Image 1 (tube, rainbow, N blue to C red):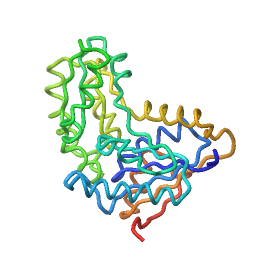
Image 2: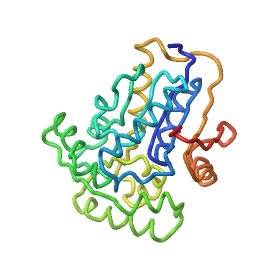
Image 3: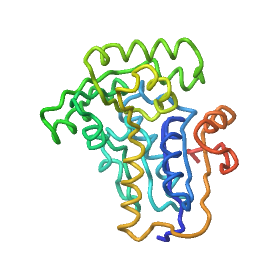
Length: 266
């Protein structure tokens, strides 16, 4: 495997573009291939067996593109277990960070909020990770089911987004949190709205930075980090190419991106 090989990034839809943004900023000399399965999103209403089949199809497609690493840019898919997704693939899979270290550094009061999907909240993975580091911390999880449909629908300036943010923030504000993690890759699309709702006293953390650091460290250990040449970004989706272009424009400079609609099943 060569250091000049591309890095794969996958998600069920467009949320992982927020992770791709951070990866591209941190590793500008790397070639990225992003796959969003926009034809079959959302995955949340599907069975675990079906979701695993879809993820395996994406990983196998990326393997056919000769990638040297694959980043699972989705918290829900990460919760399936990176080891169980690895199988016989010849490259390392990297899942989303739970951000526990960042949160505990940011939170003076050790009162921490978690915004995530209902599935991610139900696993208690973030709460367990935080308490494993500091059992005196208080964790306040909040499922935010209204966010993803509004973000996928590009309702960024709508009253519905503002109302949903206020609704989900209210209990956490009452609890007195001073740090919040956006544990769904869609949520950084509305990070500025969330920050405005909580105010300056709450640090809002995107775990994409810690995820990108993990990916970079893995490449370094395996002597696969690209240190020269010019990077590139190929954004592939299985449907809705024009919508994906518009949403990608909120995260990445359009000039650096190539867009393609692909089929995952031969």
